[in-house]
Length: 322
Image (cartoon, rainbow, N blue to C red; front, side, top):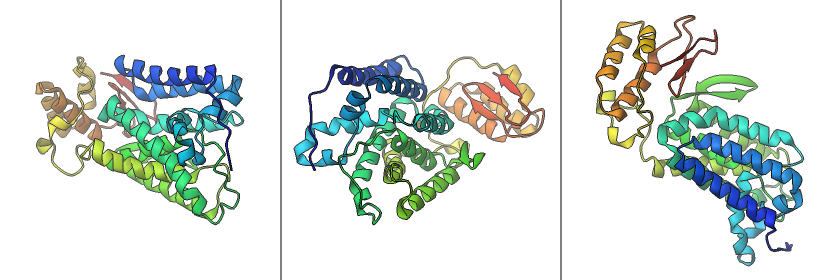
């Protein structure tokens, strides 16, 4: 099977520049890479709706591109993760929904640089996994290496795998028939189990299950190299943690009057004292994380969500900013 390769159209070149420039701009402006990626994905989706033949035809990755003859087309391993089906809007909506559920808290822990590195590398490994493993299935009689692969789901799976490896006890909202808050490790196991089952059972012909599996597994491997150690608070006392390995996130002032209201036990009051006295930003952030692992909603006693100096309760709607 052959694929006719034409020179890139102006709109495809513009789209590639837009993707790269958007990521660079977001990084240097210190924006959250999660939301920058989501914004770029939607912009590219809109462009794809208008110029679907050029964008999907020229920037989607096709397994046949792994052959020596099509080696120059390997840039599509990168561009394909920013494309989505123009025939099914649920494709991009579901991917973005999953991404926002798990990515922001992980990015805040490891920093934008490592986050973007994991996203891109696992997205590439996911596409390669699909190309190499999908033909091995008995259900792949109609497998066509010239059909383009699009979507960020492989990279999102990689983020989930990296998060599950690095901070297994962190809780995230994850869809299992309906949204359930669970440790990210459990969410990862459920996700990998379902994807493996679908891949072996045949599943839907237009879903690249091996891209999801390959992305998830590569996320674990890349995180083991890039992050190098697992998250704080999981295996050793807080006093013994390596402060040098964590990202300095928020250095702005803290409104301790709001935190005082949440310190309802003697243990929480002692932790808050340490936070107030701590002058090293890394150590202070770790103590804050420890504080919010134990704090509960002052209204209903439910677990609180904590993100970017804001806390909220899903059960009663309580919100506070510190």
